[in-house]
Amino acid sequence: MKETIDIRKLCINNMGKNIVIVGNGISGITCARHVRKLSKHRITVISSESEHFFSRTALMYIYMGHMKFEHTKPYEDHFWEKNTIDLIKKFVTQVDANNKLVLFSDGSSINYDVLVLATGSKSNKFGWPGQDYKGVQGLYHLQDLENMEENTRGISNAVIIGGGLIGIEMAEMLRSRKIGVTFLVREKNFWDNILPLEEAKMINRHILEHHVDLRLEAELKEIKGDSNGRASSIITNKGEEIPCQFVGLTAGVSPNIDFLKNSDIEIDRGILVNNFFETNVTDVYAIGDCAQFRVPPAGRKPIEQVWYTGRMQGEVLAKTICGERFPYSPSHWFNSAKFFDIEYQTYGIVNSQLSENEQTFYWEHSSGKISFRVVYDKNDKKIIGFNVFGFRLRHEVCDEWLTQKRTVDYVIEHLPKANFDPEFYRKYEPEIIAQYNKQSGKNLKLKARKGLLATFLK
Ligand SMILES: Cc1cc2nc3c(=O)[nH]c(=O)nc-3n(C[C@H](O)[C@H](O)[C@H](O)COP(=O)(O)OP(=O)(O)OC[C@H]3O[C@@H](n4cnc5c(N)ncnc54)[C@H](O)[C@@H]3O)c2cc1C
Image (cartoon, rainbow, N blue to C red; front, side, top):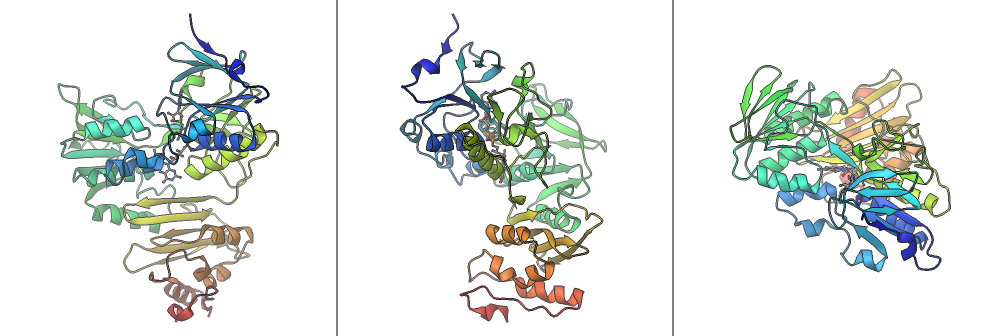
């Protein structure tokens, strides 16, 4: 007989609802933690990936030997029991919304009062011939890291397909073990569907400096295998054959929602939700990488696949679940990443191409590794967004400037206020303002951050 875990019966008197969360990533876990802070609801978190929550963004550092898996767990293993958050390591195959049941691959099931779907993403595969050969894989889950460890042992050459953030991380991982890397990028320049031309070219150069054979406007046509069913080479759209023993598929990710295909829960690319994360089925919510907004918040995309938005979404949903119906209304867009040694931050909206009403100011250091861009409205000069490469700005200051709709002049003059780097780091604001003054014919002066010696501004 199939087992159904009736957690209602397990509830201690008045412990509230049974909250079942599928997914123990940042979204599901943040939701669980905040529901626990706000209530005595029974909470069960399910994941087939790992027993305990870990930081997905740190996966690369395990491969590179900078961290052990244990170090990527933000909470001690006893945290969950102490906070009465039950953990189940099983794979969910179906949701029976009529009976409020979640079904597992081992035939068992669990019932819920409230269901939160936080199942994240999976690597894209586009049906390439040979994509299932041994040695061909994406990088998203812990199991991918384990496979990568196995698949790259003792190899000399790898090919990476797809020039996004995960692709460049994979290149860095492989180079850390001195494996030769050919990087096929479909676009004219690295990530140029997101980055403006100058920044995209800066990263092209940086990738080449790290001895990665970057092939722009190159696509995968086919993966060839040997008699053991292992990848042995790839063929590009230009007919070139590149020998390799490992193929990394990093052409984006998509919501991990296949298990919902025959359910009553409405899906498109992701699980469709409103700004309370409600799906079309009562008491079923979706958050994080797997959720798709029917109407995205202003200035945002329908699917947000970044760490900090998953965290925000988990926290906001916890309020609604605990009785304070709370809409998701994020502040300005922010993202950060690292391209080998170059740190990147973006605030507000910086598109790869300027729109009609936009103008931009761009400064690049002579090293070709540090840059600053501000995009602003052509008419009223109010800022729309900025990109920073190679140094860091303070999130709260940038966010405030965008909210206050500061002008480009104001931002350039007050850049020292936003600089995040320690005082003894080299400062670039004098060069930035000098170039701005030269281009605009103005004579703006830097305003020093309060309490700081202004000597470096001279
Ligand atoms: C290598 C890498 C580097 C990244 N670096 C950055 C970065 O620097 N900055 C940034 O903002 N973002 C980064 N991201 C993206 C970020 O990690 C994700 O946006 C975030 O982890 C999504 O969180 P989530 O909780 O929505 O989903 P996930 O973290 O994907 O968690 C979902 C969990 O649900 C489980 N699950 C799914 N389906 C089922 C099922 N049917 N049954 C049981 N369990 C299931 C999954 O196995 C997984 O454990 C990176 C991603 C990767 C892969």
